[in-house]
Image (cartoon, rainbow, N blue to C red; front, side, top):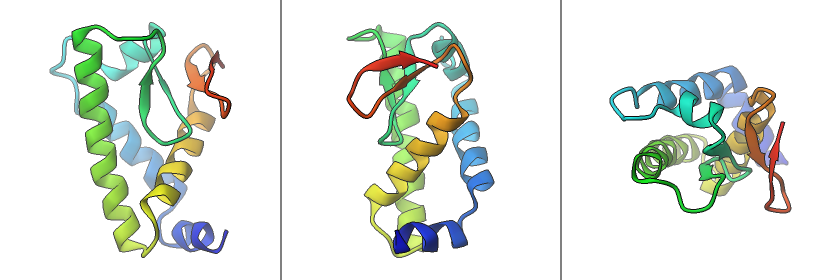
Length: 119
């Protein structure tokens, strides 16, 4: 808990959410973008801070989108963890929690038990 409080002191939740949204917007050149994939129920947010495929093995475009977004997120999470002298896992879990909280109704999130649920 001390680490999470320290992290929140140095990195505000709104800044984290802006970063997450901007990561999604950088994929506009892909055949499917993040918002479309979420709206179609193809991808969802997970407690670990990364996107996952809701319907098993994704198609090529969706797999590429997930890979690109998750790689960008990991890069940002790593920077945040180093900057705040905390573990990567703490940043990932905090980002996952916030992303799930901000997911709109009708989109999918992965529960702590590992099942996909529609919000």
